[in-house]
Structures are given as C-alpha cells and as structure tokens.
View (cartoon, rainbow, N blue to C red):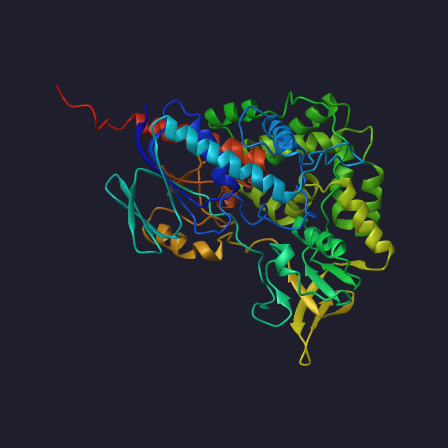
Length: 508
C-alpha cells in the first residue's frame, strides 16, 4: 500500500537511480514519485553517458551495485547482459584480476535499474512521472513543498531529494569561451574529437577525469605532447589485487553508537582505531602513513611506477584503508572537531581522494607507456594559464612554462560544489530559508538522514544526496556511499510519511 507521500527527485543521474532502488524496496512506497531532469541521457549523469570504449569504471563490480545489501547485483546483471545479447562481459584487468567495466556499459546498467525500480514502484501503487524540465525553485507553503520547473509549471510535494551532481570542472583561470579551451571533457568522444593528432594539449587536473582525457586521446591515436597540470601533481593511486578483510574495529556501528551518545572523536583517536584495524589485518599504521606522506613529495612518474609494481603487495594496508574510509568515513566525519575537519580537507583532501579512488592497473600501465614514448608529462605548482595573442595558451608553473594548442578543463568542481545548472534552485533554497551553505562546500545536512539543516534544525521534507552534501559528510564519492545515503533517505521519508494522516481514512 502506498504511503501518503508525494516524493520528488531533483536530478536523474546515478544518485537518483540508487534512491529509486531504495524507495522501491521500502516497506511502503510513496503515493507519487516524480523525477525532474532535462538531461538527454537520463539516469547516466556526466560520467556514464554513451562515450568512448576507452573509459572504464575505476572500481570492481561489487562496489558499483546500486542495490543495498546485494554486492553481486551488478555482476549478475553483467552475466544476464552477456546471455541475452551475446555481449562481452569479461573485462578483467590482467594485473589485478579485477573486472573493470566500460563506463557506457555501466550507464546501461543504471538505465535498466532505474526502469526496474520505476516498474516496481508502479506495481506497488505509486504514480510515476518523469518531468523533462529543470527545477528552478523550491519553496514551502505550510506542510507542502512547491517545486517550480523551467517550463513554468508548479508541482506540489511532501518530500524532495536534491541530487543534482557536482557539475563540470572548475575554471579558475577564466578560460571559458576562448578558442581552444574545452571546459568539460565529457562526453570525450564528442568534446575531444576536434583535437589534432599532433597538437599539444594541457589538461588542467590530475585526477580521474584528467586520466580519462589521456586514455581517450591515446585510444584515438594522438601523438602530440600532453601535460597533466595541477597544483600538487598527485595522481590517483593504483588499485591493488583485492584481499578479504571484514572491518572489526573501524566500523560504522561503533561510530554511530558514539554519535547516539553525543560523543566527539578527536582525529588522533580516530587514527588510533584505524591503527587497530590495520594491525588486525596484518598491516600497520606506519606503512599507510608512509604512503600518505609520499603522495605529496614523491615525483608522479616514480610513484606511478612503484605503485604499479606493488599491485600484488603482501601488505594489505592500502586495501583496508580503501574499504574503511568510504564505508565508515561518513560516520566518523561528523564526530570530528571542526579544526580536525578543516585540517583534513585543506591539507589532505587530494591525498585521500588519490588513495581511496585508485585507477585500474591497466590504466597506470597505459600512462607509463605514454610517458616512455615522450607523449605525457606531469606538471605541478600551476600558477597561471593564459591565452596567447597569436592563438594557443601558455601554462606557467613554479618550475617553468609549457605551450599548448588546446587546454582541457579536468579539475575538481568549484569550491562551493554548486553546479552551474542548479544555481537558481540552490539560490531559492537559501533565499527561502530551506538551506544553509556549508563553509566547506555544498549545503548543510545531518548525517543521520541527509536532511537539510538550518540553524541546527533538521528538515524532514528536503534531503540532499551526492556531492552537494560534501561539506557536511565529506565522503560522498563512490557508489557504495551513494547507496548508503539513499537508504537513509528512503527510511527517513518512510518514517515521516507514517506520521502523516492517510487521506483515504475518514474519521468515525
């Protein structure tokens, strides 16, 4: 039986798919479910739309499933896909033994999961609508939320979940609009198609998006010099062969119990618990600390070679860290004192992203091959990128300059984490007192439900899922984190709906 809740999902990417799956499995489904998104590639977001076969996901299938409690969900889908279409599903990395799936194929999975969840919701009594228009305003009138879309229509809701993604890369050098500047590389098959085979390219950034640019150019036969330019020159780590380890000390239950008791957790104490976990796994805090220190000091190519050679390392420390941080980090983060959170974000954000969002070993091998051919360099200490009067660009770093015919934006999102396409919506939320910006980016939310918070009051009607919650939760990256937060939100909507009077029940 449906619950008396009109639920709206603002945004139709991977976050929305995780939420739809969670809602479809709730004890009682919402009375209505509306999804608002104008994208031509619904359910896929920026990263998983139809694109070059050179782009793979960066995590094993069990970390890409949208179904809570079912780590084999995506793997079973791959097997069924192969059986039904005779399509290739063996994408095993030769170095690590991990299957890494093409991004576009994972987008197919997201699409089918979304449609399956909508069918389930409809079969259980929900009325479904997909509104192909952007939301530009969200207000509250009494207990009713009013969503206004760009086409001028108003939609009444009881609950709204804002999952609009992070938008494209930031443009700190103000190059947008200049000839030869590509502000966002996705989809790479279209956005990078105009780059000549011998043109010199500077890619602003050194994370996974920047790596995608290199992989795409390499697959297309590009011969010109490519420079990955960033402030610190930290590349994603290289994923190692998996090991089995169940967290025993650094667990979500432990830290959730601390939160329930109103406790705080100094960073030194959190590190001590992590040390217990590493020791139990047969590693040590010292080995992980050495890797963390190397991220900011080791030359990028040397670090890449060393990490590729360590794919089969007997020390499980990094693999435990890669499991513990995204799985348990969201429960640790709110317990930390503010000065510890500022310290981690300002000094260690790139290192954490590097170690916990590693690249496939085959990707690392491709990068090193390009380095050895003289086609790929890394530049750190970026100071300025400027357009030259005769065309092209000059990159200035702390150690020298580089000339480029093309510059590709691949840095992280803007510091406030607000996607440009969602500016009107976010402005309305803050102007109407429904949301408060977080000083570290995004909007303030509570850990327990991902509900918006204003002056410490938690909203039971409006929630945030994905990168807009990064200031409050920090660990919003990765499908497992999205799934966990989606389940929290679905449960919160169910609880709040249970408090509402059923309009079909008449007083005696």
